[in-house]
Image (cartoon, rainbow, N blue to C red; front, side, top):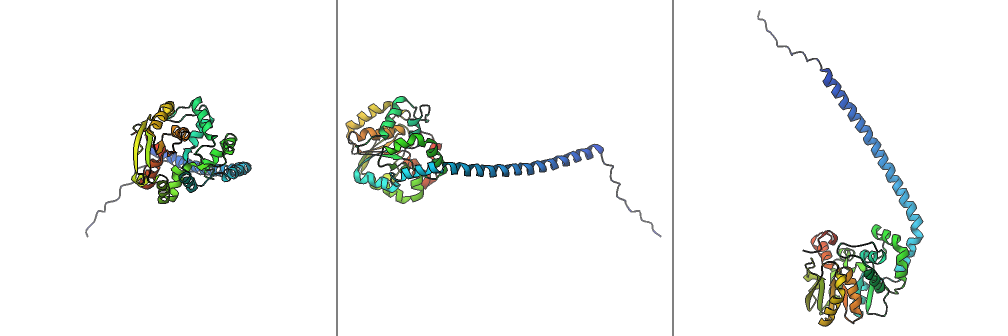
Length: 302
């Protein structure tokens, strides 16, 4: 009879006490982490609930104030299309006040990256906002229910209310912004093209600025020439800029010069020269139609 020797599996080595202890510690840490994650999730949910509650209480408390803001603005502010229609039909200059210009006017310690604040700048911005009997349309941002603008108007209404109430009619600042072009797209472009159709324009922009002549926007002009102003702190040179422009006797001025452009429209309106403060209009067009970044994310100069 043949005998077969079968190989037996070797016996498992005895567990190493140190490894066993280490694995146990790892498992304990996993369990602790799971507990902490569950606790964190519960805390975050509680914070979210409390935040919603606080927002609700804040909105309820501020509701009368916000209704006052909306009512006051609704009774005097033109729509975006009516703003451009009014400028076109009445041959008005356009002085746009955005949150930057308004903060510069209201707060001495507020600056923007390309315009340092000063007493003279604040005084003239306030003067321009109160101007009447000029061929000039002052524009303010819409008091919309968008979170940014709702908070802006709520926080600054005590200072803005008397400025708003001194103007029987206000234009809409967002005519050059994404709110207009992003919502109405080519209809917004055509509205602007109709404002300067067949006109000869002088473009005033910062030297080396990223402002480009977009044919889709400016193709309806008869001609356009460019006047280079300082790329930063242009308000400091506004006297000489105005003198040079008056000497040119332009048919129409387009200003892309930040707060200085707002005041250029104000000053030239006093001399009977129609001036449109068009701000970041080409950068907004590129953002909406070409997917470029926001104007604020781009450098001021090329």
